[in-house]
Image 1: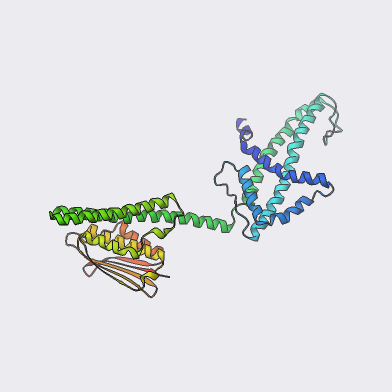
Image 2: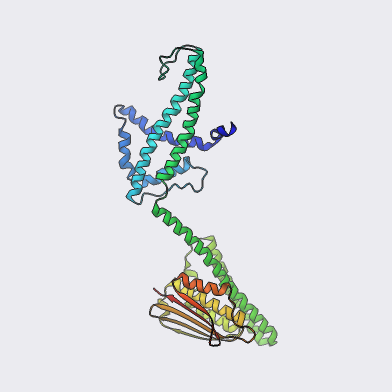
Length: 384
């Protein structure tokens, strides 16, 4: 019994009832003006529903009154973008008015019928109530009182559920809106993945340089070398802190532009930090690097950063050849370093996967592995 009566204890049941009564204000006003043409309000709703902003107003009202406690109700709050959305709004307005008329009739007359049955059971017949106006008093009518009350309960709960279902169907997200929501969700997931890569590349590079520099300074036992090493560690740490602050800014503000991220135009700083760590970097840039689009240049920077980090982490202070070429609509990056006898080359963990994933994300490709006694990283990214 308690479960049966539970809907009567929810506030949503009554806000939905209010939602059904709202159109009756317009209908009642019109019937007061001209009761001979009750169909006019339904006719007027057709051009009204074709107005794009009406869909937004109906969506806001439906979410507020029909699904107040649901964060994702499936009801759109955007204006009509297509004619299909406009006609769905028209259909919704007509259906809402029909349900409003039926719901108002049920919630007004069913309690009156229950009251009339009680009067018939105890005394004279009530007046003004359909069906009961000509009935004769009899005590047995008291047995029928629960029937209109149960019907009233069903009307209050049932009409509320029905109008909510129709709102989700007729005011729900269109195919284009669902696609846009899916693209936005995909973009958020890609952004999270990108941030994880950013932290791995930037902080990993800084820590690798700092570890290599500190180890070399301790082994060298030279004051001048130690001073240079400490300066390089300081500069690398400062750059890492800037990158960390920027990434945290992206987390705090999802719409922050990506223009603040480093590009291949900042590759000199990256190469200098590798040289300061002891690597003998021979770099060459060919082609119009300034014509490379920002997203491609930023991913190219991260690929170069990850490759140099792997060199320092796994091969140590060895000669490294870096070639950056822009030609025929392709940005090519080639990083070669000598393999040491003790360590067969850079590992095959998340760093190399990150290089390949970054290239694939832009429609390019990347190859990593031993080649003629060197460790070879070659990535090609389409410029257009």
